[in-house]
Amino acid sequence: MEEVFAKPLGKMLNAGLLERTADGFRLSEQGILFGNDVFAEFIGSISLNS
Image (cartoon, rainbow, N blue to C red; front, side, top):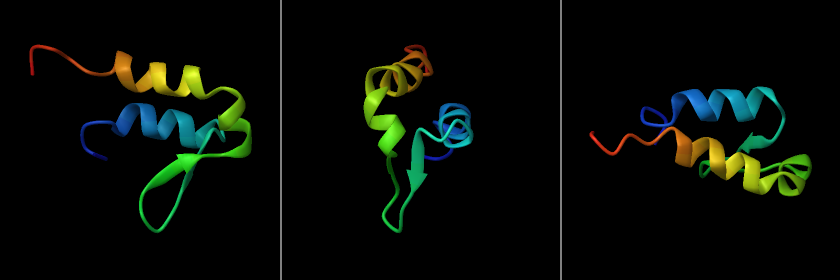
């Protein structure tokens, strides 16, 4: 997951919208408010030609 989504993960972690957990990642309290924007970052990073 981290290889495929490195760019949006880094962007959302730096913005404080995601938090790293022992199991992976989760929305932060602030991220919950902007969840649609966070998910859009991941959807926009997927290439259908890969």
